Image (cartoon, rainbow over all chains, first blue to last red; front, side, top):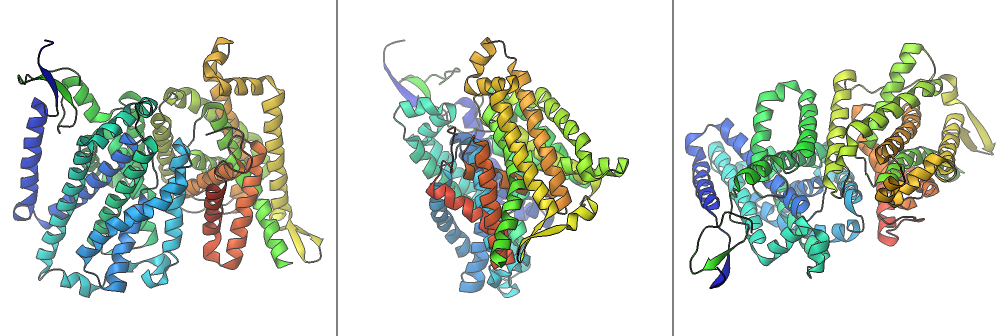
Length: 346
Length: 288
């Protein structure tokens, strides 16, 4: 037992199955234009954007402990950057989406400098104020329609692809690729040494700090990275919508309340949570959308119930019951060279 | 003269913001809870007042006699039945539960009362004004509202430092475990704090409803105003919230005078400026 060297391993039996399944799902989804109709493609693309937004919020709140109710600031920023770049500077829409990312990260710097002075729930409301400021500023830009908003010019939309069908395929693949990239980046981040630091912060901030982790710096970086991703996804969302206005771009319900419910129901602080949560959320939405505001009321109630009785969400229940992880993120110590599968804790 | 008028109106509306802030500050002080549903509870109080005035035919200020106890009971029940289970070291449960509550109240009110805007009619008093000096006019109702805000904050101050309940609040705030050892039932103390917070909310809600139109969706903005007043004034300082509310009100009034689109923006920018220059607020008492 005490002989031999130990080495850290990420993969477990369940994560190997998980990665295979995720890979297969990705291929099936990439082929969706060949098996799905327009309606399905639209729905799937919308689902992808929510998976990406929820995963980014999960990184922020679940791992870095930065509970934000102001991520709509970056969704709206991305959307408005797309429209500004395309309409005012003649940039290609796809290039505009890619430019929105770095600008989002850049804008996150002064925002973070300011609101990191607030702690806990006050930080949350501070992010909200920033989003409100963004919304009010956007409604002052008369070149982009001011308070009533603006549509993407038809010429730009038509120039994207030779036919309407091809354009729809293009945006669908774009949504899939961007969401895949966001998820991939988050997994890569969590598997790196910074990811280990983040997981430590998630589990106990004080203990993480006493082990020499520069908590503030890591949080700052995570905030910037989420700003990057969220602005990019925001630009994508409004390329799909083709119309933007301050109220839709900076909507706290659409881009934050739903995203929080998704993450909490799926399982906060776990990478699988937002994916499970989005699936549940959309299933509920398809089933209950006719109820209107009652549906939102029920979502609020479900989130409260989950928070009180299953604070780790649906995936948390599954992971703890069966010891599963869909992606190889946890570290297990194993005896080298004999690589036996331990069933226990890291 | 015009600017003096503008600033004066800003100061008076600041009293309303201070009442939004006082309830928020109170429960944060006692149990470190930030109630995201605070603004929606203000709107709920306005609708309760609407029902009371319609059912009994009384004027809004008299309806306070019923609205305040109703809201206080809701607050006590809410804390005992729900929010006490969320308190602990983790920030997320109270945040998410009050966030869920906010969505529930908003959409519940939408179901019951539709999205139409409503207003409480206070009669002739609404338009009564008097001239303080040449060219400077003050409305009677805004003045009453400001006086009530000062009275509410003075009352909370006396309650905190001169009564047994206030002593229990301060003890629980300082150290929950020791307070429990001394025989305080902290669940009851927390519930009393929430009841008191909602009593203040009730007063704020009625004045809001007399002053402007309201609909189920305006809660979050009231939460933000209250929060900004708390941070500007400094965490944990009741008189600070009054100063914070006044600064917010005056900034908004000045912004609106320059350009109607800048009213809210000016208030937010004043808040962000304070945050940049003096993040602990003007008169801090506890560290957040």
